[in-house]
Length: 186
Image (cartoon, rainbow, N blue to C red):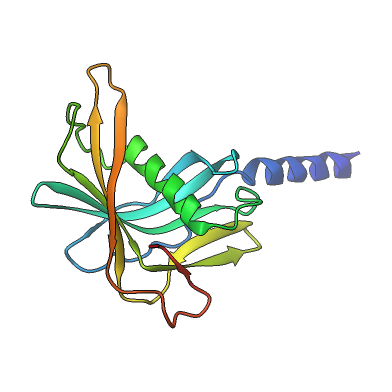
């Protein structure tokens, strides 16, 4: 009877622990003009409608009044993205979660906002790395030089409703020659 109890507790611990994703790597920023932030553990809705815990690793800086974020990696449970074959849709969902959740604690200017006030950047190329033991998939930058930048206006209404509007996307560099890597920018 004791063996059954112990086995049941192990199974429960595995099931409960399976939804929790912890940062197991802490990727570097692009260069020393960025400030590395602690990876953010949060919950996100994936494009397939599944809600899962994720880790979003990022760096920040402010340049000429524009708040900038560089996403250096995203980790999630391997069952979260079932049926999704587009890494960019996962990165877009992570971007929206990051801007909406605002772990940077940036103030939210009042709406309407007509000037780009926030930029989110990514490496031009990403790769998927599976950690089968932990059941985690990591979206990590490849070694390619180049950055894809999405420019936004972010503002809040008087009632606190946040509006995030994508204004433009630009890129430097390309993913050409990076074996097993996925291009972030169209």
